[in-house]
Length: 108
Image (cartoon, one colour):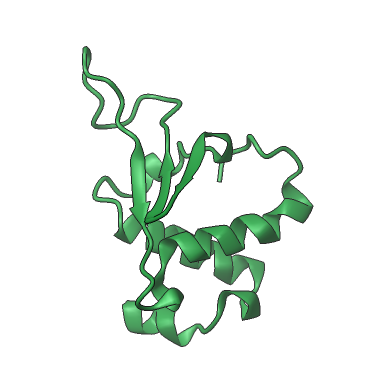
């Protein structure tokens, strides 16, 4: 899987569909709870950090329990290989979508 993602090349050379699929795949591979929680991520709840990016949940997740505070989703940068970095890919996706998405509070 990682060989295929690497073989896709740089983010700026990908079609929007390819970039979308790459972003979802890298985020789901780096988040143990998987794709179910990815659908809940909202750009307005995104917070950049020196070592990655976090999202504050705005909805209950599958792992939510009554009485426990919601924990942020954190995605670590992978600077050793930017072709496999979920944060770099997410940033490229958001930049590409800036021209088409309109409202920045929409979901990723």
